[in-house]
Length: 259
Image (tube, rainbow, N blue to C red; front, side, top):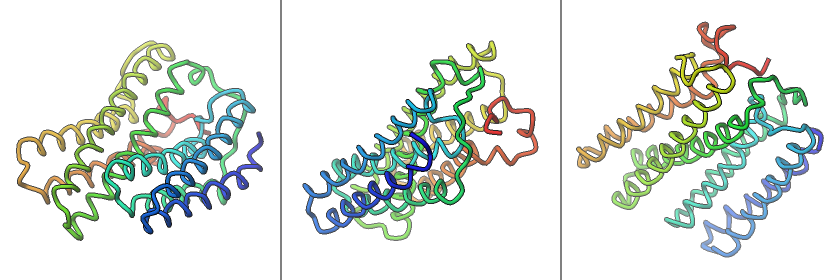
């Protein structure tokens, strides 16, 4: 499957997700579930087809990881909608997925069949996929925190949803870090080396852990903990793509392999 076909799969998926988001607002749950799942299946079909075509998981470049993020956002939105029936969540997940899809459409990166030796480890694919799911879950939790700061309605329900999402996101982030350590051991001979990427991963992980501990011990203080969650998501963005622009990572980080 070549990159040129992506636009057709993307358009079909986004249209179905939009219908699902509309159905959620109109409280037509059956339509919301059906169309969102159909869109996910179409989008995932492209990912799998591309995987087969290039001979390895599409995870090498930022453009390829955006494919996974675009997939996991509506999936996470559907999970949240199923659990807490937030009518807005499918609109958010569709809108943000559309942003990442548009970036890939208007500024695609080169997708090569060549894969450097470090990325041929069996731990590489699960490491990145698990991380992308964690990022999507934590992104939804951050949006809920922002909405709660602006309009603190249904406080107890929203706080419960945020805490559950952060717990799930941190759990998957932890699993992703463990997979990453196993990958690093096989690729470079050590589990951890305080590479710029690894350093920011540790900072991000500790920031979310701090959020959970603060929430457990000081549950009555809502605003500070919501701001902690927003700051943690900013740190996550630095870990994901921001380090590519830091002088410390230029030519020094073993995790800069998209060029």
